[in-house]
Image 1 (tube, rainbow, N blue to C red):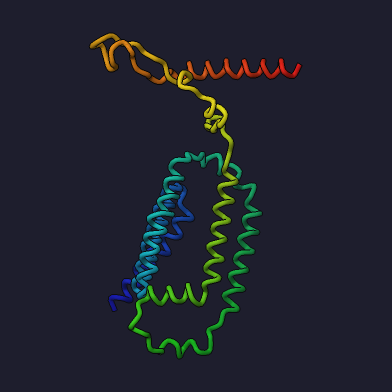
Image 2 (spheres, helix red, strand yellow):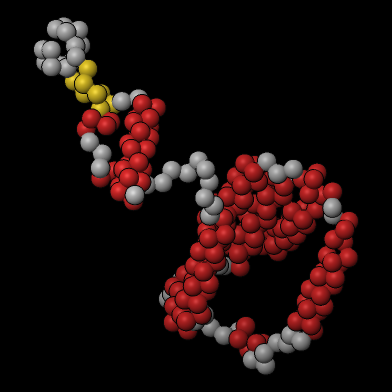
Length: 237
């Protein structure tokens, strides 16, 4: 009796939070309701006896994916008023896509049938010597290992594609110059500072090295590159 009440309670909160994810105007609120939906789905998995799926849902989706969504939404500072300004123009296209998806769902649900032996499998004895986690691992890595590896490859390709699409050569990016690094000398980046006795670190009047200011180093490198350019120009003539 208590299990049934808890099932309907978590299921009701799950459906309500899932609907709020779509209908909420504030994207931060949508992500928070999504986290609530994940927690209630994990509770349903616990009631069904699938504790591994429940913990995976909480750790992976709530602890990583949903938090990532929340940080991205809060840090992007998207102007949603501007995004909603052209919403009415895409209403016919959105309605058409929704109609196609709804018809596909009806086709799948209408053609779905129970297996003939499904009723008998409900009363089949369960092997209590292995846990749900072990049974799931045997199923994934034995019967469906090729499909599991294929899904991993698909995710890898999607990750590489996302990196390639978002990679931009910004002006503020710092690139490595191998020739400049190999030709650099001590005098290019360090300067000798002479100190008197008891005036600072160093032995006697020999002084010590300290890094040159960044603007001075850049100016010297600019003069060097200019000189190399004139020398190459002269050799060309």
